Image 1 (cartoon, helix red, strand yellow):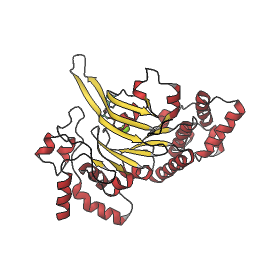
Image 2 (cartoon, rainbow, N blue to C red):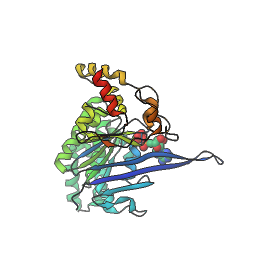
Image 3 (spheres, protein in one colour):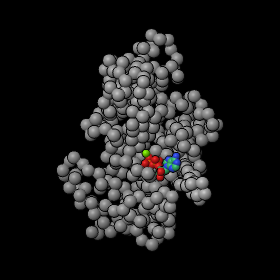
Image 4 (tube, rainbow, N blue to C red):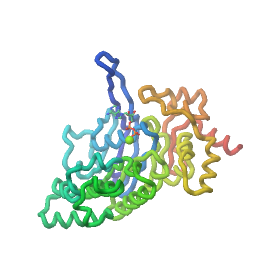
Length: 336
Ligand SMILES: Nc1ncnc2c1ncn2[C@@H]1O[C@H](COP(=O)(O)OP(=O)(O)O)[C@@H](O)[C@H]1O
Ligand SMILES: [Mg+2]
């Protein structure tokens, strides 16, 4: 045990080498570019950004399912990127994952009880009676009824299936769970239930989460800190409440403005912010715009933005943003 953060992602880059057709030119897709953040034990780091911004690739690099082209991932002081081709058993146990679609990650032929029992057997061998008690305890801890242990995935609702995926992760007593869009496929009320479950389990077991979602409102509810990803780069990081209530980077403002909220007063404020909404599509990561990658969609971008790649710099509090025009933008706003 070390006293540093549980997980530390240090200048991580992930590139994919693509080749189209037999004689096609080899091209490099930079999915993740120089990303750094840490997760403390018992805390949640929320990663937010549009589809294609590199969120899952970061999660996969932590899980060793995507190769780090540069940089490092450390877990409890250990250099994960330096592991050999076989991921050590202790790391496979410590770091679990919950994906968006449990239907594709759960074995359709196994009952819920068998799925959980299998995870226990792999990492925490115990006798049959103890294992049965443990399965029952875990089923209960994720809010399922005892009879659900006899059910197959297709007999369950989407929310129940996601509870099973969480149960399977919990069964091995992990320290970190990568939650990759775990509620994105669920209806709103089920989303809230699953999110509340994750928060309860965090308190009960001291779990850490990397919580990935494209919706900033969802991420805000579970996260202690948030990182906003744009075309593979972090453009803003900070305490969840600050990033959500007072977004600084133009891209984060756009994300906040584009989120629909239930509260009418808040929605009115958001609508005023709609002028901040930037049109246009996410550029291709095969050809990211030079300088600040967001300049093609940013209403404040000037010549400098097209030329200079902004670094993440401390703004105030514990926040950081990568925008060379931040001070001017905010002065302009105050004057308006
Ligand atoms: N295995 C892969 N091979 C090639 N390109 C990939 C691979 N995985 C992801 N990508 C590309 O990397 C970029 C980031 O993808 P991803 O991490 O899945 O984004 P997100 O999870 O934010 O939607 C996308 O352009 C995607 O097409
Ligand atoms: Mg994804």
